[in-house]
Image 1: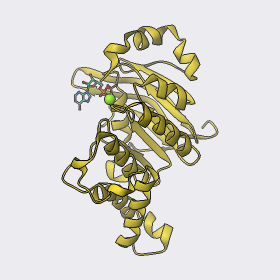
Image 2 (image 1 turned 60 degrees about the horizontal axis):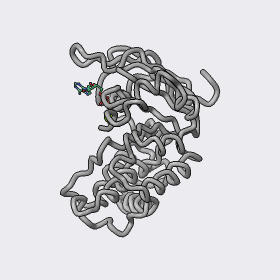
Image 3 (image 1 turned 30 degrees about the vertical axis):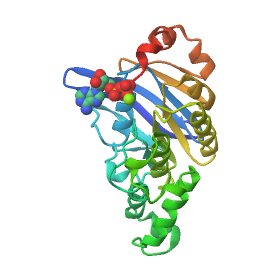
Image 4 (image 1 turned 135 degrees about the vertical axis):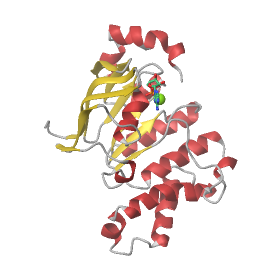
Length: 257
Ligand SMILES: Nc1ncnc2c1ncn2[C@@H]1O[C@H](COP(=O)(O)OP(=O)(O)O)[C@@H](O)[C@H]1O
Ligand SMILES: [Mg+2]
């Protein structure tokens, strides 16, 4: 294992019928870094997250966490593995309150038994969970809307709540799928600073089409095209890579999803 690698994916392939969504994908995430995963619409970015989260089953490939090879996780194992994700779009339950939406992330945390380890208390201690959910909401500046139904929020606030739901489990690895999608410049600026603040305690993989976000928050970037990594490097290296320009940046208008 390379020193400081928290997550390593080797030779990951995923087929949907005859479609090779991912074909021999390799990448590694280092501790405390923000890793960008970019590429045109349909390149396979979300499928990488789905494989990591047990939503799709890989046809081949292996996964290591902190240098130890593990089985591809089932969704209910993620909290224990300290992995959390946000969904492309928003993915909140519209009829539930903001607070209950975040509690879904917190209850996973409780079920993992970590709650008991952290607080020396019964894992059904709902009060603690509530405090945790409230703190997560306040961290992304939406604490005041905790009691509102999710479907009454303005769109940028729903994106914040979806991040709170991921943060409430205190992940060591955070997967963000298009967090800037649909946001205006002010919210994007806020998102940039949030991601930079999270880095000290969380290693992050971000899938994002907004190149200004990618260029400002990422330490390294991998570029996917038709299910294969075609380039990797620093933001500047990737930006100047001819294959990337051809595959992605040159067709930016088509790349929006
Ligand atoms: N569950 C699925 N069943 C069938 N095809 C899928 C499924 N998920 C994704 N795909 C296909 O796999 C390819 C990669 O999709 P995706 O990972 O969502 O791309 P990206 O996130 O890069 O836009 C696309 O062609 C998409 O239509
Ligand atoms: Mg996607």
